[in-house]
Structure formats: structure tokens, C-alpha cells
Length: 308
Image 1 (tube, rainbow, N blue to C red):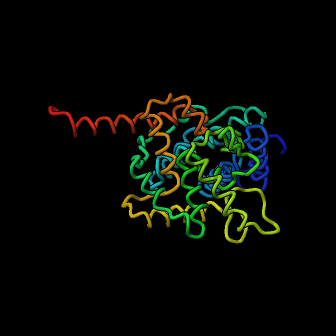
Image 2: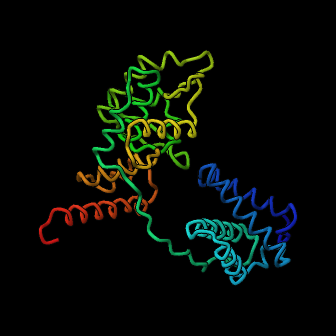
Image 3: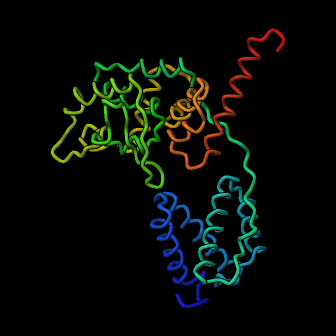
């Protein structure tokens, strides 16, 4: 780039955004999905600046302009959580340009993040989890595999992408530990409960060898074609098994992660330990489970206390 020739309408903007995305990938180690959503947010803003306000350089972007753009997004019906992602993308982008000397002042410095209504995740209770897992017939084809999938989702609170990418060499059955790669390519160790370990051992010894093909990798969970299960297929498996279990609840993979965290907290686990096991970068993300637990306690109190 040449000085202030950062153009919001010409290919030059793409060079700026490209260099910024490279910075996110290499310096910050942020995930591919995060990089894609950030790129999309910035490209849409650049396109609006050029089309609606004929602004073609980053130096001409002002705080009122940013507020006007975000106001328009809100009127279009964009959710507060989505607007927050756009605001964060703009803030870190302009901070990046300032540190590189490509702008003289940061127009997004005082831009406020929208307030977001606290979302309380749904959870299953312990009896529902048991019904879901125990309903899988392990004598049927893929029964051992699907039982191990459910056990591991609940036992270790894995994200579905972490489950899809879990590898044999990263599982230590003696120590009952699985090494997983989470968001931002961060490695963490997660404990695997005794029942999940037994389910995994049964699948790996008796069923996985039948799914292996010449080009199969070391991913733990395989499709009938011998390839690793995609996140989409894992989602389908969870939905199919939930339907067969007879549970009325809307069951999906992340629900088991929420249930894992809520049950740990309800049984006295420390919030910091839960944060570590879930792979949350910020404790505030984990704190949502304290609200879930408080709601559960209030419901129990209302149901059983004579003067509630």
C-alpha cells in the first residue's frame, strides 16, 4: 500500500483486508471461521462506504459514519450479537491500521459494543442424558461408534469440530486423557470419564477396524466409507439417535456440551476448572453456566419448599 491510498472501492481495500486477515492468522492464531466472518464484515462495510457515501479511503472514515452504518444494520433486523461481531471486527481493523501508520486517528476507538440479552443455554438433566446414551443398541451396526460419540460429547464437553478431528494418537486410555485442538488452534487436555473410556475402547477394538479403508487417517470416528465423520454428519447422527431415544427435547451436539458444564457446576466443580475443560479463552463465557445453575436451584426451591 502507498500511504493514504487505502481505497474502500478499489482492489486496494482487499490488499488491506488481506494483510489484516494474515495478521489475525499468524499473530493472533484465530480460527478460519473467525477470519472468514471478519473478512465478510469488513468487505460489506467497505462496499457500503463506497456505494452509499462515496468514501474511498480509511482516513475519511469517522465515528458518526460508523454509527450510521451500524444503525442501518440494526434497522435491517441484524441481531445485537451479529452487530457486536461487526463492531469488534471494525475496532480491531482500525486499531491495526493505526499501529501500521496507515491512518492518523482511530475512528472506532470510542465505538460502543451493543448490549446483548444474556442467553441461557438449554441443558438436559442427568436422567435424560442417561436415556439418550443407554438407548443406543451397541449390537446394531455403528452402535458402538455412536455410543462412543455420545459418551465423549457428554463426558468431555467437546465441541463438534473437536470431536470430528479427535485422533487415536491423542487419546491416552491409561491416563483417560484426550488432547484436542480447539478454537484458534489451541491445544488442551480433557479428561475422559470411565464410561466414555469403556465405550471408546469397545468401538476402537471391535467396530473401527471394520470401517478402515486403505486411505483412512487416524481420526477416531469414521464413516462407512472409511473417511473421518464431518461435523454435518455428526450433527445428523446425534439427531437420529435422539429421535430413536424417544426424548421430546430438541437435542443437538452443543446441548451435550452445555449439559456437561451445568452438571459439573451443579455437583460442585470450580468454574475455573470448567473454563479450562471447555477451552474458553475468557471466564465470562463460562459464567453463563452459573446463571443456568441458579435458575435450576430456584426451580427446585419453588417445587419443594412449602413456603416458596
